Image (cartoon, rainbow, N blue to C red):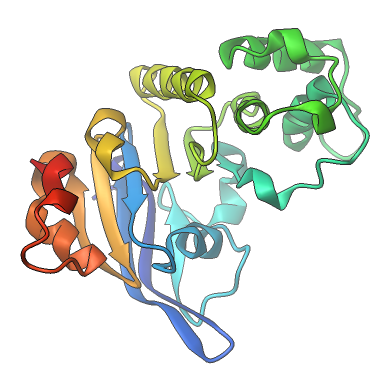
Length: 250
């Protein structure tokens, strides 16, 4: 595909932790304007894949590109929402301050966030349904509220590509609905979203495309083509007679 056709791609990407291979020869491509889910069992390398693409863990081999270019050349077009467990939630700061941090990349070295940036943060908080928490200390938030703060911080960057690591993990139903609503708005705006996802029953509802991963890519493409019983069985190494596990793939 041309640069305009792919939001991100990897070429023969391999990663190991110490001497243990985690990913082997990954060729991964995400078209623009889709919600792509990455699914697979625990230890399959889902989070490692996006971290290696973003340069957060070193690859053994291979490379990644975004909109046809190295990440360093298009960094402002790429937003990353890490898992909430990766943050020190005891740090004494407010929800609005955390979201405003998402504007730092566009300010340059010598500018500090001003009224415009704080107003942008409030808009992002409204979009995620937590504007009423703007002055709350982040340590007082529930798991679902924390995820929505992270999402708001990513939204305020206004990237073209959103990469989210387990955005639905450990959250309440209200937060899940709020995040799904944001995904739908991003899709309607022709943004691209990549989510590491664990709930197989909601893949068809949330995603246009899916990548099934277990250290290598088992299948990748539009949900209707890639999300089959056979591919899910191979990804999760499900026994041949365990049809209950695969009901959601029908």
